[in-house]
Each structure stands twice: as structure tokens, then as C-alpha cells.
Amino acid sequence: MAAKQKPKLAMYWAAACGGCEISVLNIGDKLLAVDEAFDVAFWPVAADFKVKDVEAYPDGYIDLCLFNGAIRTSENEEMAHLLRRKSKVLVAFGACASEGGIPALASLTTRQAIFRTVYLDNPSIDNPDGVLPQPISQVPEGELRIPTYAETVRALDQVVPVDYVMPGCPPEPHQIGAVVEAIISGATLPAPGSTILGAGNSAVCDECPLEKHEKKIQRFYRPYAINPQPGVCLLEQGLVCLGPATRCGCGALCPQVGMRCAGCYGPLDGAADQGARILAAIASVVDAGNARDDEAALMHKAQEVMDMLADPAGTFYRFSLAHSLLQRARVADPPPSPREAAPAGKEMHHETHHD
Amino acid sequence: MSEPYQPVIIGFLCNWCSYRAADLAGTARLHYAPNMRPIRVMCSGRVEPDLVLKALREGADGVLIAGCHPGECHYIEGNLKTLRRFVLLQRLLRQFGIEEERVQLVWASASEGTVLAAAVNRMTEQLRAMGPLRWRQNVLGGNGHGPAQVVSQPVTLASEEA
Image (cartoon, rainbow over all chains, first blue to last red; front, side):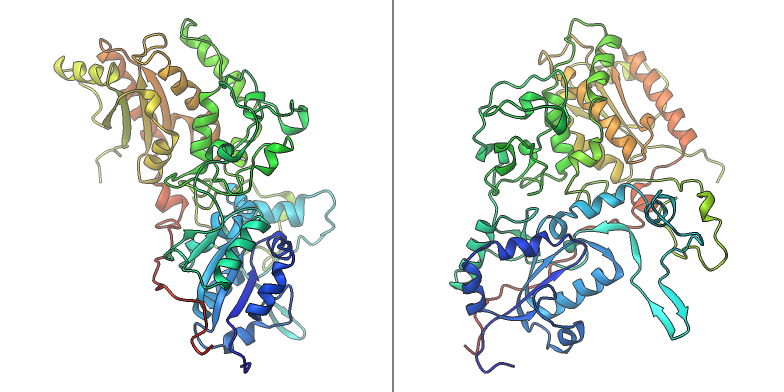
């Protein structure tokens, strides 16, 4: 241990893209303050520490651990448990750790279907023997093990207790900077227990400067299909903006440049399910037919408009599927691919959870 | 063992029409399937999609939303919002692998006890043919992935020895 007793900092990356690490670097010269205030105890992206170093630390040795990424593999899960044990304060950092994020969209299908697409059925794949990743394989040098791949992707707090949550894809640098400054200054943090830090308490619309009128939309547009009129609410223009159901804190950056809010800061306080909330909001502003239409015509008009939405589940739960009420799709096993008539020992051995 | 499977339907009934239709079905002594658990709401437009998803997650086999005929809403247009949400919810549920018969919308005025009873009968038979949903057990594998229990105590970050 160093002679100088600085608090210990860790940052780890599970099922994530790396954007969260970049967003930490993006806090600018505050990074120097971080370096001054903390000793890095574990940060695989930035410094050469090994898992065995972490295992050797006494429990609670790490003062602050920023954990980004969802829990998809057995390795992610092991690291979540290890870092929980070794950390005084564990922060679910970014959308994937806090809500499941993009990786959790995998829960709309099955592991088997994903493996089939990635290793067998894609036109660019060259895998004549139909080899799939095996948790254990025998090679001349001995036995090789790789992590297993979960059927359902989870958020960090569905695996271990989390003290604080910093949402966002990625969390905005000014929010990270503010939280880091508060921690360094010794300010009292709110009581832990999945407490949100570095975000606001109202909807993105609250921060969004675009002009808003009564919303009545007759059709939806996908983002590439329209050049939105500047300065006017995107939802009013038929873009599926998740602002009404998404926590603020980002400064409404996306809507201001004509890109609909994708919902990365997660649901508002008290909302059980971000997707259901945005579904209710979006459907309520659709103006298709009126009370004088006959019932069949009314139904038909509503269906016509809703059919313009290409992927409701993937749009409404873009970042929050792991924390949604249904959590994953019920998928009947797809018929085996012709390529998958693999010889014994080459098929996957995992049991599946669904029927 | 020999008893037929009894699906559980959560019924959200509008106070101004369908709940009275259910009342009428009762006072008229209509015989219909006892599988719907009625919940009175002030308007079918008050039925947030969360409520439907939560019912399905927590063990319901189906959800029936019943409201006033278009043009007859006590709140002018609440039921039109219901319709649009319902249509979009059906598309969402399809992606989650939930058959569309599991969530149904019916218009039943206060005088249409028979319409409501017929809808419950029809839906019960459809659900019985499909079998139980049991989202937690069959899809989430047990209890689902709830939040891990929070056990940590408040801590200060400043190192004690410093």
C-alpha cells in the first residue's frame, strides 16, 4: 500500500462499448483533480491491473468503483460480485449498468438465435464446420474455458446491490465532473441504495428549448426520412422522441440538433417501465380518425398509423429493457439452421429458460 | 387433475359503461365464465400500458380492457386514446412473444351486459386453448430479475487514515 493514504478508485467495463470510459476522459482538466485525489486501484482500460490484484485486496479496499456495462456473461457477473465485495461505494455508471442499455436488447431474442446469426447464418461468415463457442474445449495444450453467455441480459443492480446510479449513454461529462468534485470535496452524498446521481428529476422536455404546441400527429417518420424543421418539437413533427418519458440531465443535446431523444437517461422517478410510459405518450398524441367514425374505420386508421413504427419494442426500450416489466421476450426456439446439423460435441450445451 | 385449466383474466372496466354492463349481467343473472377479475377504473383511457404489462408479468393469462363505444366517452375522447394505445401495445406485445388474444379491447355500454359476458366467454375459451402464460416461471425462469437486496451502509469516502 502506498504511504500516502489516498482513496482508491476503480473503473470496470462489463458488457459495454467503451463510451463510458471516454466520457470520463471527457471531463477535461478535472481529470487531473481525480488523479490528485485518488489512487487508481483497478482500471483495465487505463492501467495494467489484473483480476488477481483485485482478489488480493482486502474487502472494502476500493473506495469508489465506477462499474459500466450490463451483465451478459458469467465473467461480467463474477466481476460484479468481486468488485461489490472489494468496494465501499459501487456506482452503476452509464445506461448499460443502470438499465441494461443497448446490450439488453439481446433479450428480445435468444442466445441460440444470436449465435446462429453471428457464427453460422451471416453471409460473410466462413465457418464450414459450424463451430460455436464452447464454455470448455479440449486442446492439445489442455482445457480451455471461456465465460458462458446468459440468455437474459441484466442491469448491475439485478446482480449485486448498487449504491449510486449515474445514468446516460454515456453520462454527460459535466455531470461526471460535478459528481467527482462533490466526492473529492467531501460533500455528503445522498443516502446510498440505487440513488440517482448526476441527473435531473424531470423529463428531457423540461430542458429542451424546442418550441412546443398542442401535439397532434397523423404519421411517424424514421429519423432518416425527414429533415426536421429547426426549433420545433420533434414529436410534433412525427419523430418518435422519448423526451416525455426520459429523465433529464443531459441538457436535451440530441433534440437540439434534430435527433430524437433515444431515452438513454432512463425512466423518470416513479415510472416502473420507461417503454410503457413512452408508448402511452406517443399513442395519445396520434390523431387518427374521430369519434364520429364507425368503430371498424377507427380501428383501421389507428392501425395504419401505428404500422409506421418499425420497431416499437426496440425504440421504446432502447436502453431500459433489463429494467422493464416484462424484461425479455418469450421466444419459441427457431427451427434449426441447415448449417447447424453439427456433429456431437459442437452444439451448445446450455439449458434454456423459456419454453 | 380432471378440472379444466382456468385462465385468469384481469378486466379493467370503465366506471361509466362496462362496469355497469358487468353489474347488469349480474342482476340479469346471465351465466358467463367466472374467469375475469374486474377492476373498476374511471375511464378506459386511464389504463396505462404499465398496468397491462404488470398484470401479465404478475401471473394474469390475459387482460381485458372494456370502455364506452367511440363517441360515448364520459370524458369526450378518453376511449379514442385507449384505442390508439391498445393498437400500439398489441404491436409491442407481439415483439415480446405474447399472442394478441391475451390482451383484448371491447366496447360495452351500460346496457350491454350480454356483450360484455360474451366477450369474457370468448376470451376465456381462447386463453384456455392457448394454455397458461406464467411469465415469471416460464419466461423469466423463477422470480425474474428484481433488484438485488441493498445491504450497504452509508460510508464516507475520505480515507480514515488520511
